[in-house]
Image (cartoon, rainbow, N blue to C red):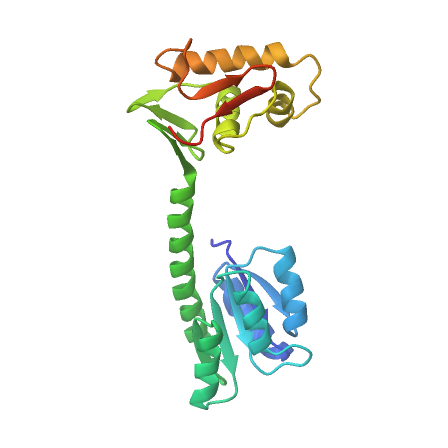
Length: 233
């Protein structure tokens, strides 16, 4: 069953409930709002994958809500309207809507259009995720999703804690982090006499990723301050 969430924003409760029944039968989570203000409030609290948005509503209409959404997110928006004029459709699409349906409509067609928008949106997000999973530093690649580390085309085995330290430094290239900062972020507890613990873990990481641990290429020691990974290698 699908777990994607669809937000229905329409001041006509009967229409919302009808659409919700069809979507819930397909396995989707459904959120409902009676106007744009309520819809934006739900968006701030919940992760939403597709928005079905009526144009004519009190307080905040669909056009205004569409503009506000597009200022912060690329969630697919399907607009609904009792108006059939081309200008309304053009205006909705110009403001950032991805699709447009006029009332009355076939609920099954709306579900099909929602599925189409979901496929596009999820495919795009998977592409973004793949691009952001890997941290590339010189000849080292750190895959934050699979916890794999590749150095000079060779896979390196690290313990979960060693990986967390390496990832922490790699996500902040050029930034010197003290042993206390590293300990608190990785161990998730107050750093009390943590310097030796961190130093031992750094040494073990270097033994695995460095060609010459005594003259490290990746993890540098800034004496009296802490450790860092250079921005450019």
